Image (cartoon, rainbow, N blue to C red; front, side, top):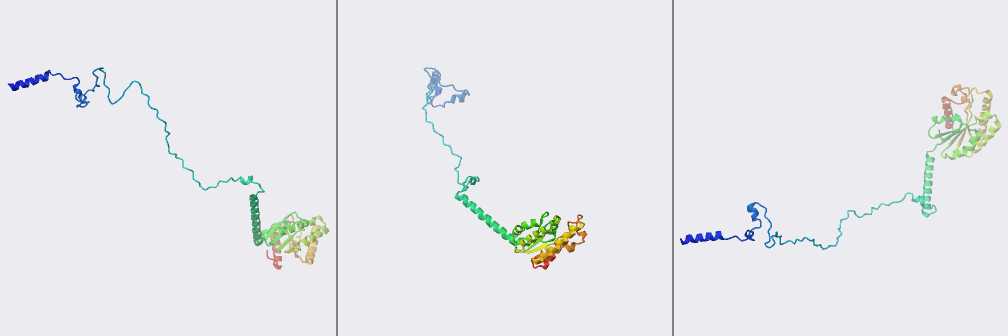
Length: 303
C-alpha cells in the first residue's frame, strides 16, 4: 500500500507542477527543435520585459547608419600587353634626299665622278665590241644600192642616200667612216643624179674632191661606175657613158679601184623597172654579184 501511495503521490506532483515560461527554449536543446516537431516556422524569441523579438546577440543593429572609415584609394596595377620595341636593324632612308643635296658637296662630286668612270668604262667596252663584231665592208651610194644589202653577208653594211649627189657624199664620207672603225673596204656608188644638171666640169671637180678625201683613209676604196638608162633619151645616155670612161681613167691614175657596171647593163631592159632608171630585183642581184666579183679579185676581205 505504501508503495502504491508513493507512486500516486508522485503522479500528482507531476500533474500539479506548472512548466516554466519558455522552458522549451532550453539552451541544451537545438534552436530548431520546435520547427522539427511541428513543421512550422519558429518565431523569434521575445524578451520578457519589452515583448519585442530578441535580436541575435552576435550582431549590432542600429536604425542610424554608422559612418564607415574612409579607406585610401589604391591604384590597380595592370599588366601592359605592349612589348618593348626591338631594334630590327632596318635602315630607313629618303630616296629624294639626293635631290636636296648641294651639287658642290663632296658626296655629290664623288657620285658624279663614279658615274663618269662607269660611262667611260661602258663606252670602252662597247667600242671594243664594235671593233671585233662590226662590219668589214661598207657600201655608200644613191638609190641604186638600196636593196643590195639582201645579197651580202652580215659583215657588209649598206648606207643608201637616195637624193644625195657627189658633193653631198663628199661632205659626209669622213664622218661615216669614223663611225665604222672596223671597215676594211669602202664602196662608193654615186653620180647618176648629177648628170641631170648637165654640168660636166662641176661633176668632175666634185669627184676629184671625193677621191682626195678617201685616199687618206686606211681602207681599200672602190668607186662603182654609173648605170646606163633605158628609154631615157640619148643625151642622158651619152653623158653617163662619158662619165663612166672618165672615172675609169681617173681612178686608174690615182690607184683607186674602179667597178665597171656600164657594159653589163647596156641594152638589158629586163633588168630595169618600167621607168627605165631603177633596177628591178634581177638587176639589183646582178649589181651585187658584180661588186662581189671585184672584191674577189682584190686583196680586200670578201663581202
